[in-house]
Length: 359
Image (cartoon, rainbow, N blue to C red):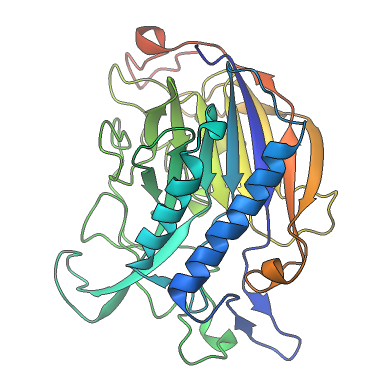
């Protein structure tokens, strides 16, 4: 059945390091990386099951449910997991989300921060530099398929603890790590990423890390936090005859939707779930917007309008949450079901000449 409606479900939790009253910052979590990863997968499952048990989500099969967690959901007590723990997270998420009860759902599972020792000149060589990647798993529910991933390109100054705020010697600070750009081995944050028409299309390669992909018959664009502010997708529009983005996804920690960076088509949707501390339960750490005017390829910006919040529920209060995050509980926020133009397959809006505004 073709998708003609979308419902955004945001899983909000504070993923920032804890700021101590006495000064300095710490990453929250459990000492053993594998144990920490499994505990966060379990907490993700708890929030999801609470959401699934609620009456606020649309049971219609032609409504795609998009469940999103914020950036830095999986990182551990040093700021980044050893790279082998990426597999622990992915296996745990896959095992949960393949259940048939999640058919018709798409999951943006926050992000997983991993580290390894490598060479500054090439990610394929051995070396002593601590390299990190910020990886967003995107998993289709109800099926046993390999996840796809989008990798953050631009590291922000708040992505790791600052040097002067470091308390534990073993913690990684912003000065300790290097960040290779997604899909561009050997290029690191601070360098200019290659941009241009067609540069972000994943095609059939789910692990390319690039930001535009097809899923559930629709075309998605995904940017992680600062990538959105720096217009990663807008600088790399679809190539000739490639489909335009219908749904734009922005998991983040310290970002909101910026109209001048929106690339979704007219009547498309833009969704953001942020990991910054919330003022109170009534103050959203997420946004969902409909595009009322698409951006022009010659410089005119998109315009958007808010989608209403239908309901919020509090999830997993108590020690299980506060051991892993600087938060007493999480919030699942249901946005109103929203119709989209059910344009799929060969009839999708496509880029016939990228320098012109197709709308």
